[in-house]
Picture 1: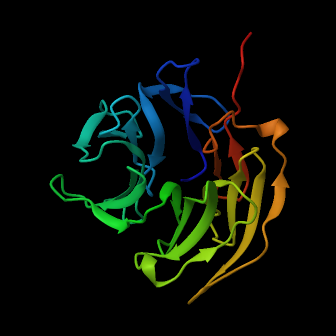
Picture 2 (picture 1 turned 90 degrees about the horizontal axis):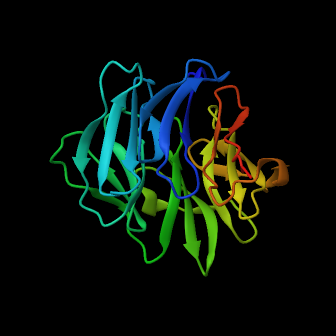
Picture 3 (picture 1 turned 60 degrees about the vertical axis):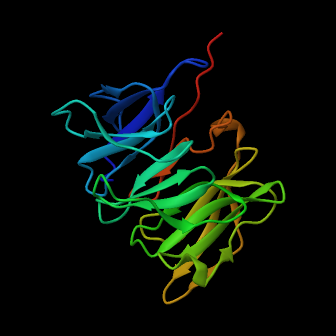
Length: 239
């Protein structure tokens, strides 16, 4: 969250992905855990959370300073969980599982609370830094679109901010003036946002073409640094 350290997944082919932590310049590398899907930082940067890649019904947590080994946070009552990210309070989590979104409270026995259960599949999501807006990548009519909702009252309004057919991996800038997303070919798009009592948004514009930063099927391999720059994990193909 402070832009000084990054999390990266490493693995070859179908091998389980290992989670590594390092400084932004690539130094001070540390292996955190094995068998990891899409890790996330707590808002204060003190903790790291993730879903197990093979057993997608288990969530894990580890201290960012490496002071103790990773521990199981909880067994999840889902068939397949994909993404777990901290809410702005640093205690609750938002989880994408079985095609829907849920909120998990901080207590181990807290039951998952649906954010919005719809007949369509929600793939990925991003909660704005102030916790008031939820961007969702949603599958409708065989294509993915980016919708933004007020949070937590997601049923009150919906704005479809993406155009075209195929929009994945929404990411907010720290100042919430821009919402980024990836298209199916890997292109990075940017949408100007004005978030006040309601949401105003512009037409998506092409920010970066895909050949240099193609994602190889992993649209989520990028993030936004605090200063607004984009950080990419570039796949390495070995012969």
